[in-house]
Length: 309
View 1 (tube, one colour):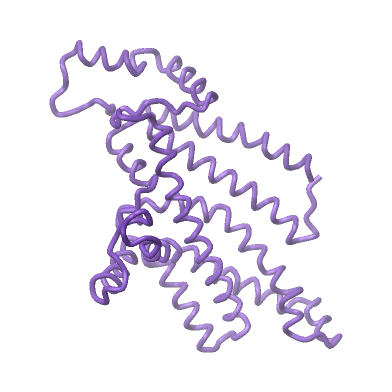
View 2 (tube, one colour):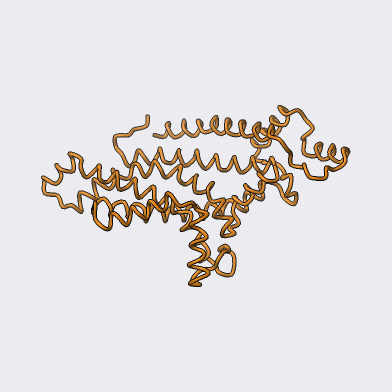
């Protein structure tokens, strides 16, 4: 197991290398630049700016220099936000996005698994229909619709929650409720449907009928045999889901004014801020590959048939 973990960790390096390389050249060869404007500065000024940020060097030299900076942990200066470097902006915004993502994923897991289990145990009942109807809403309705609807009812109409803000503001932790609920709707819907389908499949298995014939109580069968096996599809979904939550929180962060990484991701794309775009891409890529790695490890603990040698 230890050897497998070490090999997988080493195998993450080529994956990240390919992602960074492709992203670097795609961004640089795209039309436009970080200093393009309606009124172009004088040519001498542009030459000085390009020399300052090493943009006057050949593209392959820019790439080699950038990769060397990444190895040292330096993501470079921001072309537009020149008060601080990219490391500073990511270090101050990423924890907020991760916190929101963890709470949203935890909420989606808690409610989604329970909804799926209840639906499977009460198949074709009103509980099943209501839970799956809510899941369908979570899948089909986009976040930029769910967020404003929640804001309208809970903040504007019923005055129960603040319209926006963050936990560091005057309203405190209550400000995270609406963005977390909004962000958890899509993963909740998928987790509920996966849990229900997997639970039904497990309940119809031969070994479950064997356990029932031996006189085991239904609660024991569900807790010891059915639930553990039915969580495997959910676990395989959690890794990409968390990465999707963090990267997909851009819209939610804009709606509820959350000071997360999504704001810089959007602004860097609009401003063609090369280094800030690359910094956010690297962070999102690391989150994705690490979550997939963690899921593979958890898999072996849930399913004894899976071994890593």
